[in-house]
Image (cartoon, rainbow, N blue to C red; front, side):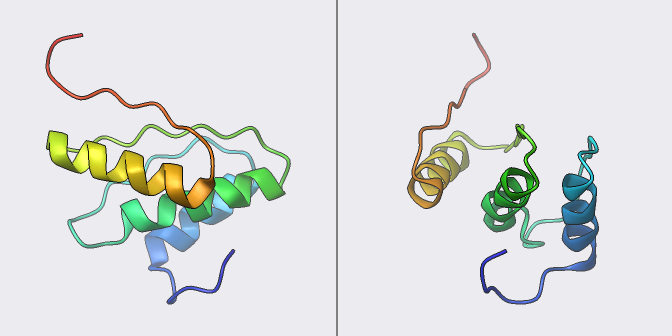
Length: 87
C-alpha cells in the first residue's frame, strides 16, 4: 500500500480479506476512512493478482460524483457510477 496514515482496524482487516481473495463488506461510521481507503484496497487486490470489483454506496448524489472523480483521478482509469432513484 502507499504510505498513508495508519489504517483503522476494520480497514486493515478488510485489506487482509482482499489479499486472500475473499468477498467482504465494510460498514463503518462517517469519517472512518472508507472512501479514501477504497483505492488502496483495490491496489492490494491488483498486487495479489485478484480482479477486484467494488460497490460503494453513498447517500447523496454529490458524494457519488465526488467519489467518482476521486477514484478516477487516483486510479488513473475510468470507473462507473449510478446516481439517482430511477434507472
